[in-house]
Image 1 (cartoon, rainbow, N blue to C red):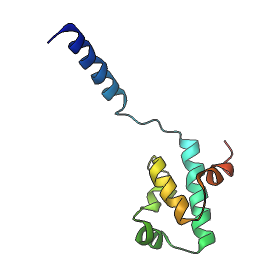
Image 2: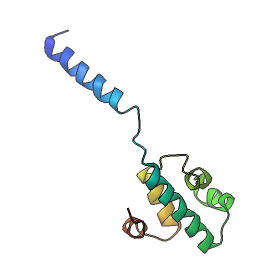
Image 3: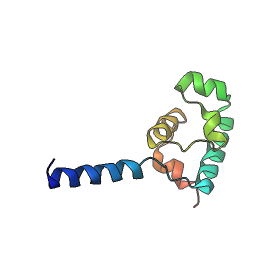
Image 4: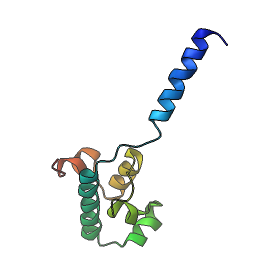
Length: 93
């Protein structure tokens, strides 16, 4: 193995190791959880109905137990007929 390939391997390994832990902002996750509870209540659907319609376990999101991905957030915003910017415009941070 050449020095360059070893150096590249170490850089990639360090990058991979740094990606193992997600950053969690508990305050933001709580605000997102509360917003989804509100949206679900306004739409008049249960957590089970949201799951059946979207395949997303919203209960985990509503309790702040998971760090929601942007893709899941977008999927739920479509379900609740919101644009991403609209969702975040009401979350004061």
